[in-house]
Length: 292
Ligand SMILES: [Mn+2]
Image (cartoon, rainbow, N blue to C red; front, side, top):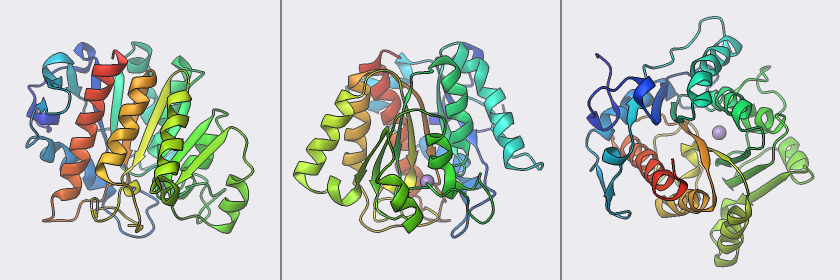
């Protein structure tokens, strides 16, 4: 095959896989720094440099889990809704078969289709989002499907939601977030106090049932993850993000994952390498603790 595979693994058709790495190079509504469309290829290229051995779990995850890298879901000229429909139809049969999808965006909008597809098999799912921004606007620049509205659209799917690492939102978002039912938020500043961090992990441990995990790369501190469209200071550390994912995996099934909004900086490899590492660590945690 002519496209890149995760970890440079030998090509495996999706139908033979338990876990599917899905590149979604979609970028239409980015408002500041752009480059999210370059992210999937950059992450796949960086993943070739990863050790297959997980130094924390003491196992070669790639030898235990049948991983396939799917062909990229390419953007639809007809607009965001057409793109989301195409993405949803692509992953629907894989989810029905119980495969774990790990999607690499692309802008945050893609999460909507992935969660809608996951919801057909896991109607009782809980959405956990890691994001510097609330993404809770009703509309942004005229569009309800802007990346700045993603978590609002997800929330409207009617499931409980937990948002961690947020440190920037508008007055409109503030007024909504602090009264919204079935919604829990741990701001980045809270997570940086020992009590706040312990409370967040205790909350995650208590989530029952399937979890869909959406990681906006900008949840990480820009010192760790500079390659994002809107780098907000005061973000989470690499180990904080890993501890959140490990905690979620230990408590129950994590049934879908995406990492979005990465915007690689040409010649500066740290962001895509860190993203590749987080995706592989996530797969390791889910395999080791979640039975997938
Ligand atoms: Mn976001």
